Image (cartoon, rainbow, N blue to C red; front, top):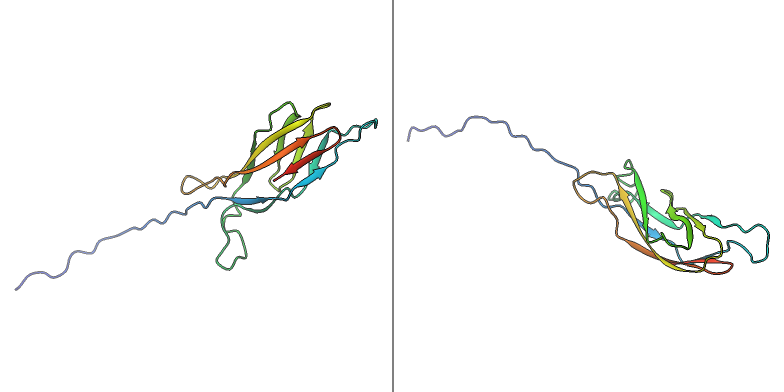
Amino acid sequence: RGGIDASPTGLLTIRVLPVNQPPSFALCCSANFRFWAAGTPDHVLSRKQESVASAILRGNLDPAGNFDREAFQNATFEVSGGASNLFTTAPVLSATGSLFLAVAPNSTGQVMLEVTLVDDGGAYGSDRSAVHEAVVSVGDSYVTLDV
């Protein structure tokens, strides 16, 4: 029919943005920590318990399950619910999964902790893990952590 059967060449740019996968972790099993013994002169009221959090991932594993594809991100644990009269300072969970507790003298009781892992992966996707709960009980000569 005598027409032109081609359009002019154009430039198309496709921008692929990474999607931040939510971090994840597991809280360990229930544990008993002996903080102090009644009647001893050296009442140790603070304690570090290692490996309370494990399987810490800042994103997701590669398809073969060999490495965390978002390991370059920084991740921190947020612990809420620990600001009570049971502790001199709020409980802290380190980036490596160690729990730090400082029990207030002559205190007994129970508190529910909510723990979330947060990464700095950006605005696309999710930067927060699911919330995990743990109950801390303080007695006369012990502290227990129940997950």
